[in-house]
Length: 126
Image 1 (tube, rainbow, N blue to C red):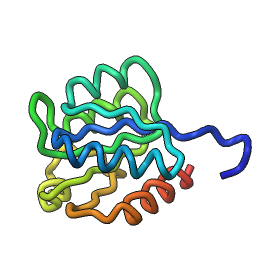
Image 2: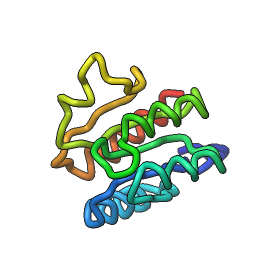
Image 3: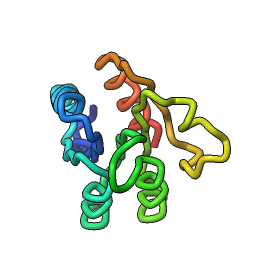
């Protein structure tokens, strides 16, 4: 990371508490600033308040699912990078889904090193 590059801010929406803690810790250890929520609605409210470089979201969540959250996030900020983490990759990849086309999908179970690598790659691709 070069010196003038700010720490990327990641918004994480994941309703599984253990998984959320696990992801936050891995991303913080990799040098990212992470704000996390356990549902899509709260995450969306936060997105409206400040910009994030990356939205990392589960797909199946209460209140607002990850696809709806991603769609709204892309409306708020067309430049935001979107990554789904899911045990239901087929759902996300369904061509009829409303998920933003540039979104990346990682399937659970996920290795932290792979997640961090994918996040770094995605953020590096300006």
